[in-house]
Amino acid sequence: MDFYKFLEKIITCDNIPQKFEMFNDLMQNFDKFDFKSNKKPKNFEKPSYASFCKIVPPAKVPRRRGFETNEKKAVLLHAIVHIEYSAIDLALDACYRFRNLPKEYYLDWLEVAQDEIRHFNLINSLLQKTGYKYGDFEVHNSLFEASKKTQDLLSRMAIIPRWYEANGLDANEKIINKLKKSKDPFAIEVIKALNIILQEEIPHVKKGDKWFKWECERKNLEPIETYFQIVDNFFKDWKKKDINVNARLKAGFSCNELKILSKKELQC
Image 1 (cartoon, rainbow, N blue to C red):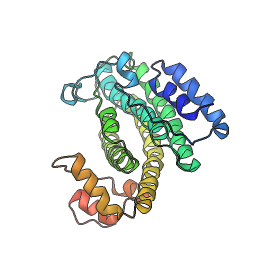
Image 2: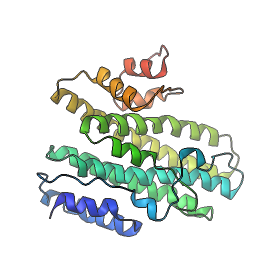
Image 3: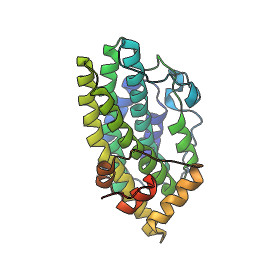
């Protein structure tokens, strides 16, 4: 079996149950695959969710305001479920795009994809309790666009896990803190799910940190300086605030990096 061809089929599949079934088949046959390939990966022109989600600019996505009605609950959960679904394809693309790397690399990112599938199912079941489903609200494709712009291992590891997924550690904590103010029993269910995701996303960022530093060492680059060069090139006038310091430290960020990110003197 061709590992990369199999991955391509899973990434481009827009039938969610079929997509997850194919992924399970791949995981069951992991030890049978050869990760060597001279073929170039394809550049995907659209994300797999394009067939069932309306894609709009980020500013046009429904605003997450309040938790009082089923629609407001659904808007929040839909945004999260979309991130989880996007993260599945991103983890798979990290395997598909970068070839002839150590077996450990592919196992790491398939394990991430496996977690993201579980997170998707967890949040999707809560979304369905509100009477809505994935695809009922507009979405943006920022993560997919970021993957298109990071076609080398160094920038991919810097931008996807060490920027976007690390930002998720910050955002998750904020959402949990807001939901704690709600007296709705459903908020407790959502908080429980988000706490699971928060704890399991830390190792995902840590894997990105590991392979970013691995590639820095391979290219004889200083990691912190290289990271901020990539971030500065990718984002204009970026600003960070309310960083989840503890989660980021567990995920591999150094105290010096967090001081630069937050522009604050931190007690790490």
